[in-house]
Image (cartoon, rainbow, N blue to C red; front, top):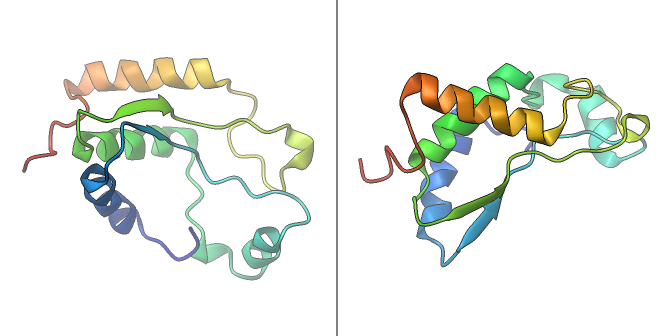
Length: 119
């Protein structure tokens, strides 16, 4: 959300883990045309953390390392037709390709969901 830092977002993994949840869905920030958020972004772009795809993958990995392994992840990203977006962020990369990239990066780093959950 606007004004939220990466560190603040990562702390939310613990808060989410403490809730009585079975599943969670992640979604990157997308700014849609004609919305209040687009106006806010145009006025104060520095208040928004718009991740590149590589940065988002690194963030998601850091987040899920802190997330309870008991919580099932149903989705990592959302897709919207480019014509609705005020700022296209990742081109036309599909969700399944992004999931494969996340899985590959997890393997490269030898890490997993919940690795830092109890620390």
